[in-house]
Length: 523
Ligand code: NAD
Image (cartoon, rainbow, N blue to C red):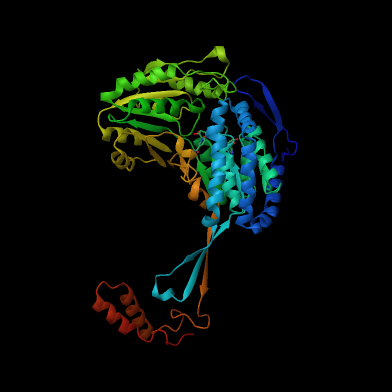
C-alpha cells in the first residue's frame, strides 16, 4: 500500500484504543507533499472525467465486489483502530459503503446526465437550454475517526463517480482504515493519482485547504469546522461541513415503550456513543417516564463492555483518554446539578484506560452541560416533559440540528410533529439508521453544518451546474438589442402586459401594442 507523504518532521501513531497496542507509525505529509498530491490529482482528473459515468460506474462495481470479498478484514481493521465491535463495523461501516456503491451504480448515470431546461418566457422561446453537471476537479476530503471507513468512503465514491479526483486526509487516529480504502479503490481500477491519501494531523488538513483544491468536504467537530469555514472564505472555496450533533429523542406516551427503550439504549451506546447521530438527549412524556427509565436501566446494565474483537461484547472503549475526560466532566456536572445516575456513571478502569460504563441519567435539565454540549460518549440523559409543545421546544433548544427522533404509534401525528423540528433528519420510530439509507441526504442545520452527503443531494455537491444556451435562430437579431425609441418602449410595455397582465382584455391590448416588435429595426 502506498502513501503519498514525503518524510516530514512529524509522525502519526495509530494505537488500538482497547489494548493500547501500537498498530503503526506513519510519516506526516508536509505542505510540499500535499501540494504535489493535489497537482498530480489535477493532472489525472481530466482523463478520469473523460472516461464518462458508465466506465466510472463499472469501476465502482469492481470496488463493491472487492469490498464485499474483504468485508471481514476491513471490519477487523476498523475494530483494531477504533475499538468498536466487529459486528458494528460490519453493520455501520462496511454495509453502508456497499450500499452507497449500490445506490451510485443504480442511479449515478441518471443523476449526472444532462437535463433539458424548457423556457416559459415568450421572449426566450426560440432558445434551447441544457443543464450540464460538471465535476469540480479536485475534491479534498477531511474525515474524522469515529466512522473511519464509511464516512470517507461514501464521500469519495460520490466524488469519484461524478468525475472528480480526490485527495483524502483521514483522521490521524485511524490511518489504517483509510489505507484499506485506498488499496480497494486502486485494486478496482481507480488510477493512483485520481485517489490519493495524505496522512497527518490537523496541519496536513490545513495544508490541503491551502492547496489548489476546488472543493472541500469536511466531517468533524464544530470547532474545526469553523476554522475551515474561515480559511475557505478567504479563497471563496466551496465547502460541505458535516459537524457535530446533540440529537433529541422524543418519546410520547403512546409509544411502544419496549421498542423505544431498546432504541434509546442502542442509539446512545452504539460505537460507545461516539456517533454524530447518537441519541444525546431523551425526552419522555411524564405519564410513562418512570416505566421508560426502568426499561432503559434494565437494558443498560445487561450490556457487556469490552474489546470489540470479542464477539460477545456490545460496547467497546472510547477512542482516547481526552474523550473519556469530556464524558466524565459532563456526567459529574449533571450529578452536581441534581441528575440521578441509574446505571454506570464512571470509568471501567479494570478493562483498560479508555472504557466508560454505559450510563443512564435521569432528571436532567437544560442547565446541565450533558443536555447542551456534544458529549460523544456512552451516556443516555433522560428528562420528563408534560406537553408535546414543551417537547418540541426542548428538542429545538440546541445550537445543533443534525437529526432527531419521535416515538409514537400514531404515524401521521409523528409526521406532523417532525415538521416542527429543526434538524436535517427526523426519524419516526427509529434512531441513527438514517445514515445507512443511501437514498437519504445526510447533513444538518445550525451548528451541525452546511451541505449534504449521501443520496442525490450528496452527489449534487460533487458537481457544479453549467447552463448551456443554444439559439435556434442564429441569423436573427434579438428584439431587445439596440435601436431603442418611443415605439420600442410602447411595444415592450405591451409585451409585458401580454405575458403578465391578470385580465384577458388587458393581455389582448398588450398584444396589439406589442405588434411589430419582431420586425423592428435593430442595430
Ligand atoms: P476533528 O474536528 O477534531 O477532526 C476532524 C478532521 O479534521 C481530522 O482529520 C483532523 O486531523 C482534521 N483537522 C483538524 N484541524 C484541522 C484544520 N485546522 N484544518 C483542516 N483539518 C483539520 O473531529 P474528530 O474528533 O475527528 O471527530 C469527531 C467530531 O466529528 C464530532 O464532533 C462528531 O459529531 C463529528 N462528526 C460529524 C459527522 C456528521 O456527519 N455530521 C459524522 C461523524 C463525526
